[in-house]
Image (cartoon, rainbow, N blue to C red; front, side, top):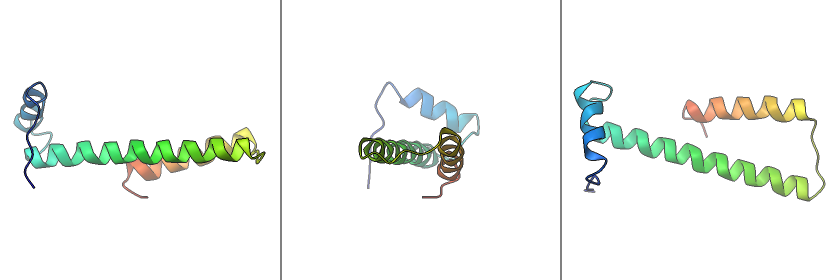
Length: 80
C-alpha cells in the first residue's frame, strides 16, 4: 500500500524522523495508526459503559476508575 502524507503534516513527520524519534516515515505512520486505534477502542468502551448505565447496570465509582486506569494502560501497551 502506498500513501501520501498531507502537505501540512509532512514537516512534522520529517522532523520526527530527523530527530530520531522514529526510524522511518513508516514508523511514524504506524504509531499514528496505533494511537487512532487506541482512541477508537476507548470510544467503544465508553459507549459500552453508557449503554450499561442506560440499562441500569451501575458500578461503584472506585471500581470504574480502577478498571478505566487498567484498560488505558493496556491500550497504551498495545493490548486489546
